[in-house]
Length: 564
Image (cartoon, rainbow, N blue to C red; front, side, top):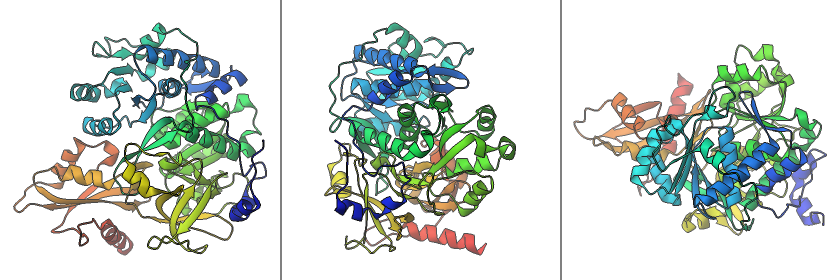
């Protein structure tokens, strides 16, 4: 039975007129668990390279069989359906295998930034009840501390270069692993069962991923994404990209995998979509612009390059950019996690590069809107809604719908919308009402159905593509004995999108310096969360009930920038 839209739905979604011709406005989603997408890819194009890690390639068939073996190994090690398992790896074949294998087991992937400190990991493991962890040698010191603090029943460790030909393979002893920890390569070698695990999964109810987010209050919460959410996102993005990808023979299909996969953007828009499109993921464990350009120099083409404005700016400004003729290598560059500046868009246009901006959230499985790939685009716009997705814009005080063209809080209804926040019914009820997700973003839709983000109700800072929650930085600063009040805010930054600045009130007679406070934060926060500057104040702006008025500080800083 074909999916269709009622006349009322067609009238409501008036933006459909701007879809590329090949894109259907409504889809039929298969009732399958998310990992079946990889199985389908492996049977359709078994010999196509699934991953390319510094020249070492793994085919879809090899990847699929390895995930089955790994999944059976997980089961033998005691991992069960519903268990939460932390996945703390840079982009690598080991991460790709582990992601799909955990879904086959029915386990729930808890995405973790490899830069997290032990304190940050402890908070997340406490919130999720995770009992397992898959990680790499660079994180072993922090994991050893965590292991001594909480109960971890399963730890498996790899060295990234173990999956690069000619680099040799590490050993359990070489990585100095604890006796009951597993070595990734050896673990996979020991598990030879290639029969798919027979774990019953309800796509609509069973969680697949816990993705931490600031939500609308700035306090990190875990968005619960079901298998159905992932399948909807995978098929919607495939539908949206058909005008480009269907024109390219499978052997030529590649996607640039430099966005971190521990974030839902990279996880869905690269790792998962590479499977449904049978595209080779060109994997980068980090973004270092010189290294990136050296690798790209030997990449003939990539039809899809999801990125963020910071990365794109660094790439287009690189001395090799003109020589490499990037427009011939990348069919579509898709920035997210914050808007591109007009200067950056103009620079890309002058270099003949096709840029389509988009918008999504952890709570919407990374998707929401995008500029059409072949159709009409508008500068500084996040595009039009994806298939099967409805938008509303409401007055933040009354909750009433605002007229088109007038800013209001963006509400989304879609199969992309999360099941809720993990073990947080209060926050779930606050943001999910009658099927509508209250995003906390202020936006408006013009007469053509194109959406423009105006501001954020929430105070989350996006710096260099990373989400930073100011209250977390406040809490760390307030641990210092000479600090009595603290407030972190995001300041506009041309390169990073935003940069973090902290305002601090000290105790009477305090002698601590800004440099000492920075060192204090560095011991408890990942590097990307560190304030770039600290300013001492006698008081900080708060409401009558003590709510932090960060906007006052932000506006002051913007005024200073304009007057300088």
